[in-house]
Length: 137
Length: 198
Image (cartoon, rainbow over all chains, first blue to last red; front, top):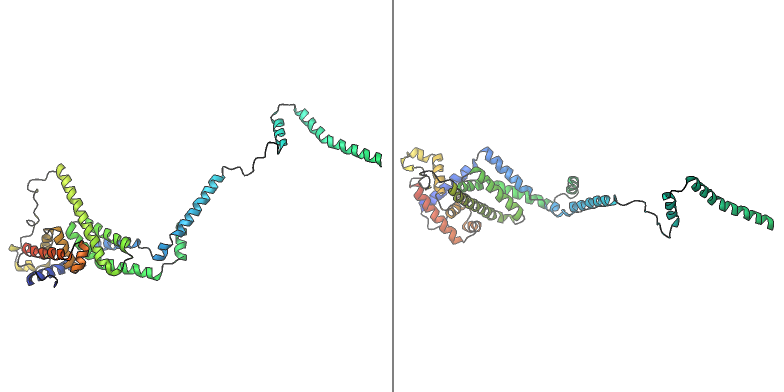
C-alpha cells in the first residue's frame, strides 16, 4: 500500500497477509454458498433486458390495449339491440295501429273480417276500373 | 400476452451490443461476488444475511447502473454493498435496542466486548499459530472488533484491492478519510492480533 506511507513495514505485511487470507477463503467458499451466489447473479441479470427488447415495451403495451378495447367493445355491444326498433310515430303510423290491434280485446272474427274488407277494397276498385274501361271502350 | 411477448422477442432479437453488455455484467459480478460475500459476512456475521446483502447489491447495480461504463461498476457496486451493510447494521442496532426492553440480557451478557472474544493467541504454539484456520479465526474476530468505517476501509482496500480514490468513492467520503480509517484499522489489527500473527 504505497498510498499509506504512515504504515510501518510490519503493518503493511500484516495488511497484505490478512488480505491474502480473506481472498483465499473467498475463493474456497463451499458449494452451497457458490450456488446461491450464482442464483443471485442470475436473478440480478434477469433485470438487465437487452436494449432491443427494452425499447420494444410499447409493442406489448399496444397489443394489450387493443385486446382490452376489443373486450370492452364486445361487452358493451351485448346490451345493444342489433335490429333497431321501428319508429312508432308519424313516420310509421301502421306500427302504432298494429300495436292497438294486438293489444285490443276485439273479437278475432271481426279482426279477420276487417282484413278481408281491407283486401277487398282495392279488388273492388280494380273491378270498377275494368268496368269503366269497358264502358269507355 | 406471453405469446405476444414471445413473438415480439422473436421478431426483434436483442442487439449484439446488448448481449455484450449482459455478458460483461455477468463476468464482472462473477468476478467480485465471492469477495463481496466475504466482506459482507465479516460485517453482518450471518451467512444468509450476507447473501441477501450481496444479492441486493447485484440487483441494484444491474438495474440502476447497468448502462454505465463498465469501469465504473466496481466502485459503484462496492458503494452499494457498503450502504447495504450499513443499513443492515442500523436495523440490527434498532432491533437490539427494541428487544432489550422485552428481553433483558442474562447475567454476564450485557457488556459483550468483541476484543474479549478474541482467541488468546499467547497460549498457542507457533505451529498452531501458523495454521491457517487459526489465523483466519483470529483475523475475523479482530475485524469484528473494529469500528464499522475502519473495517470497511480495510476490507475494501486489502480484500478487494481498491485504491484510495475508489475506496473513497465506495465509502462516500474523502481520500483523506479513507487513509485515516485504513491506517487506524491496521494499527488496531496489529494490537488485537498480537505481534506474532499470523
